[in-house]
Image (cartoon, rainbow, N blue to C red; front, top):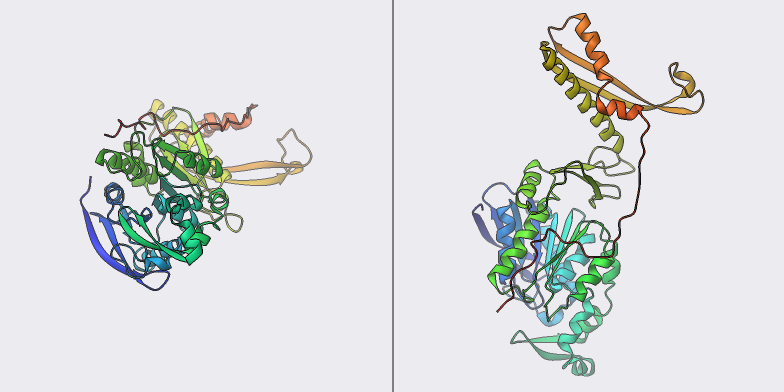
Length: 431
C-alpha cells in the first residue's frame, strides 16, 4: 500500500463556522477525491474514518474527512445544528475540494453520516458512487436515542442529552428536522452506484435498515455483510475489512485504466466469467452505462444533447467490435501466410439508407442499416494479396454474425435477495 500524507485544513461550513478537516493524500497524484461523513456525535478521527481513508489512499484516492459543526475541532454550536445543516456541511466540503483540488466523485458515510451522504449526493453533481456503513434508512431513527429526553425537548424547546458518555444540547428544531426528511425518496432517485455495508448484529442501527435502503435504491447496487462487527467498527479487523472492500468497489467507478486494473487485481474474489458481458447504469447522466467484459471495464453513453457523451454510443461500440474483429482476422491470416503486412487500420461509419439505393439488398422498400468500412493496409503487399485480404475481411466472425440469423433470448433476473460481493463477506464474531 502506498504511503500517505495527511494535511489539516479548515473551511467555512453551512452556518459560517470554520470546520476542521483532514485531507489524506496518496503518495502519487490522486486519481480521484472522496468525501467521508462520520457518525452522529463522532469526529473525523473515529477509527472507521481513519481506516477507510488509509485504504482509499492506498488505491490512489484522496479523502477529505471533517468534523461537522460543533463537533471535534470545528467551530459553531452543536445545539444549533440538525440533519439539514450536516448535509449543508457536506456540500460545503465538496465545494472546498472543487475549488482547491477536484470535486469529490465518491461519497462515503458511516451511520448518520451515511444518511447524510445519501441526501447530499444530488447536490454534488460529480458524484459517481456512494457507500454507506451502518446507515439508518430514515433519519427519524435517531429519535430512539433521544427517547428519554424527547418529552422534555418537546415541552421546553431543548434539553441536555447524554450520548456516547458526553453531554449534548438538543433542541426541538432537531427533532422537527429529522422527522421531515424524505430519505427513501432520495435513495430511490440517487442515480449512482450504491454500496450498502451493515453488520447483522448491529444493535444501534438494525440490519433491517440495510434492507430498506437496498430495496429503495435502483441498480447498480451492492450489499456487503460485516458479520461480527459492532456499529462503530471498533475492532481493527472489522474496520480494515470494510475499508478494503469499499476501496476495491469504489475503484471500479473511476474511469482511468489504473483504476480498472487495481479493481480487478484486488477484487480477485469475484471471478470473471469468460464470455459474459454485463452492462449496468453508472449514474453518469441519464444514459451512462458501465460495461464489464470479464476483467475489462468500459463506458457507454448517448452523445449530446440526449446524453452526456461520457463514452462511446452503442453503435460506436458495434462498429468497434466489427473493426477490431476485422483487423484481428486480417493479422491472423497474413501471419499464417507469412505475408509482409505491417499494419492494419479499419475506419467504420454507420448510417441509414433507403432500401432502393442498395442494389445488392433483398429488401426493396423502407430503410436499411449500412456500415461503410474502409481498410488501410501497410506493407509490401501485391495486388493479389490485397484482393485476398479484402475477401478475408468479410469472413471475420463479427461480420458473419451481423449477416446471419441471430436469436436473442431475453429474461428478467429475479431481484428478491441482497447480492453479496464475493463469498468472503463474513468475519469472525467480535469479543
